[in-house]
Length: 569
Image (cartoon, rainbow, N blue to C red; front, side, top):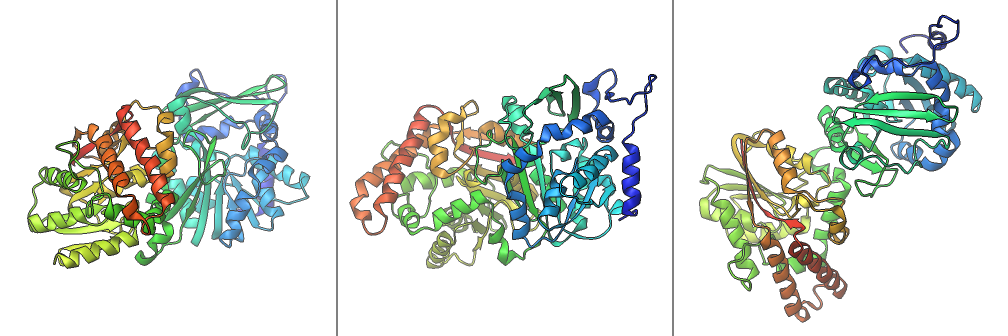
């Protein structure tokens, strides 16, 4: 520790006493100045946790109900990673520090608020006679104030949202990363601010703030501030000003600091609808894996898609029914045109948007059987790298390329488009067809795609999407079938591509083709059903029929969008 533990405790205890007012009584009031909505600085949080608020904090948490609601989630994750030594950097009044000590973890308790640390020390003694090792520390200088390396750092209770600038958030995460051992983990949580910002506030009042006689609701929310009001049964009222972190923004920051694998849970569940959880919990691993182990860090959503496309049923269905080499949405000249011809027309149309020659390097993300790659290599002589998550599809891709004497121009790489194993500025063209919907973090996919794109390059792709104004409920049958939580929209892609610095973004809207394509695939399935016997199970065929009908119905109802995005720097 930066200071002896006994000194830290004395300092924290002394700091609990606020300045008395003129009557000699302790001041329990917060001071946000004349305009509380303008208080958007990181350092102000220490003034918000006044003695009166801290003394009531345990009413808000309700230790017994909180312990029941979260169960053994954190303990199990820590034990799974072989953790012994834990740094609790947002100790608060000590709930998690005490639980970790009771489970046998060597725990150090840090917090930026001396008021909170003093209460935590009292609670440690009260709940089981534990002497907490406490230290007053600011996350931005954590390595200065706390010594040693840890197997895990936990930052819980929505505490990270007290940091109001990106510079502070990056510095804090860098400090966390530096204090972890080479294979350590960070567990950090946050409110579901995405839902609050996009749909308004609601709370199940079950998992985090469980006190029955306490109200915790937002008084004001905008993109830079979530001001919460806390009302207690005795009529007292307090506020906290916090920064509304979006989930994927938080995940991106952790990746950019260096964390390798990040799993995000909603209210302690691995699968959830984006708008359902009150809280997100991120479990981030520091361990760096070599390229050959990258499949171990695929996200849950990507792994679902990988398992699906690796199945014998899916492989045979797409190869026989969906158009052979091209397994994406087609552009149809006539309603009954062959799927293969329409699918190839999509490739030709996309290629016509590009300047391709033998010097062009193309990266095809989610390349399937490699039909597009072979067309580009054969027609223009360019070199194409195919990245795809299905090892089964990749083997078929390599086989077809060898048979067509194109394997010298086509490289096939097993991998996920959420973590591209390629250098920055490596490709003239990044190409993808109907693959991004299989990601649970499409912002990350676009970031990776633009990272590897050269300064004069072009990013071209198609993707089945929801229309900009489509209610999520209308997509339920499709999302359930694909085990997805969301779909992108044209507005989402435009916004994200502009954010990433792609100055020219064009969208050729061909949404009518989506229902047309899935209708053609359904017709081919019905026509060839008997011929699939022994190669595609009847159960798979039945599920596919239902899924294709959902796509057709969604497209005809005007809830789905599809077309060609062309983005240039």
